[in-house]
Image (cartoon, rainbow, N blue to C red; front, side):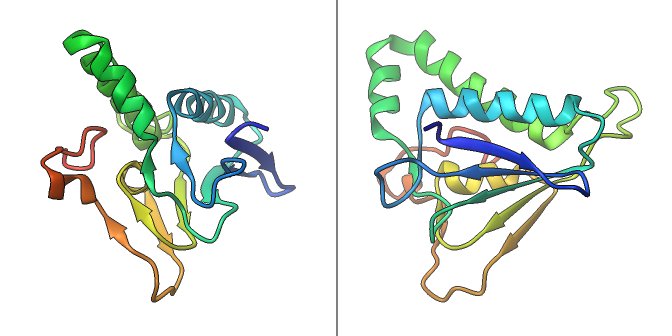
Length: 160
């Protein structure tokens, strides 16, 4: 089962649901990021889709990036790290722009993040690229960029 799936209701609202199989919390992999990018492209290209909701099937939104992704990037050297980070930036920028005309900055489709709970690392950077964030009233939820506490700068756009 893919980490992201999309359904569209009768009103033209596409819901992209994040659900990493056999994990208690969603973590982002390179493959999942590319799948998300493809679903965003599909929703933006579909004239019947009026807007997009990105949410989680789990009680929390996400715990961050799969650490294996970072290890693979490091093994590939500086160029692999640069390419990986820029690939993430491009997907998040696509969500932010959501099909707007690049000259007039008009048009496009609204994209909303619906957070049922905790959103950390890329799990916060992704919602920050959306037009609106709706968070559940969940006192156990944590929202932040914890990687900064160990000297890793948020790499996918959470600070730009």
